[in-house]
Image (spheres, helix red, strand yellow):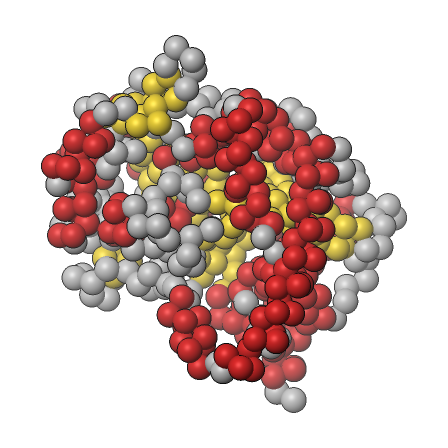
Length: 493
């Protein structure tokens, strides 16, 4: 019987990656307790306590014994983050301490359906994720990861504490464990634009570029000053106006619901083509703004203020290479591509409108705003100031500042690029990959993941504040379709 079989780790890893884990000098270094990074310590604070939930759908049934066997023989088990306990010294400082793995404690088997009969698999799994979002943290007497096998729904939920690494680190490792469906011997393609960027730089004339570079520098200084000032004020007292989607202090404890918004990457590319120099992220944030406008007008038809500005918290990868990383380089600790949490924060304002602008105009306005953000050092500042506060004032103060930023804004958004082609795990075709997390004090958290031409966004909401996330998902989907229609008209002119 074909199954989840041989699990992600059945395939042999590239020899240079295995060597980076297994060589004696590397191993001996990990035998000593290793201090957590500042970001890792922050994610462990009870007020934040972020655990990543990644659900992988499978075409064929799951063989439990095969899963456990392959985990036991896997390279993942030798990874220092996945084979270490979280310990604290007498001063409360956290360290990683290598330990042995008891597979049965990490593999959680759920044989029965997780919902009533008649509920489809997607809704059932989303409800399971919603329950996990407010569930207690994992036991500290084992490494901070679990794999939940939902046998009746043919999927696996990877539950991994954010202190082990960010989405880029974890997805890069996951893809190293997979193979392309059309070529069982080939690794999935890691998408990166770094080579194209370098090629474009080589094609430019430095004589022509020096004035532009000087102007860009002045813009960067100016916009950085204002955006960094806003960042500081958000941590102190400035907050968004209250709306039907606002969260706040303590909302992270409220019951959750999850819905899935589904997009075609080709639709996003069609819109991108109609707006010069636009990126997929420009399209994504345009969809968020247009979708929220539609939803708020539905919830508050007479109370929605024209041009209302909401602020989102966006997680940004700060590694030199954009997108997914080569795992060998990450494990070697190369400067531009390290394992861990290399994340900055951007505050992204979204303007809501009662009467929808021309969809392409919405994209152009969003692109203009994001272009300004890209010129600033805001994300790097947030990362640097976080490390500084953590080092000088400790994790409690750093947590308070981060918590206030979340309470004073309206939503969280993240976007991770997945494999472009269909993939398999141990020969079992993967039907979808979706990601979400434990709850924050936001009432609305969105995580986008692309896979094989599809992009799916998990919408995690506090259900007493946003009772209809399925309708919100439709608002986002319809917003993209309207943009696509407008783009098709534009492209045919």
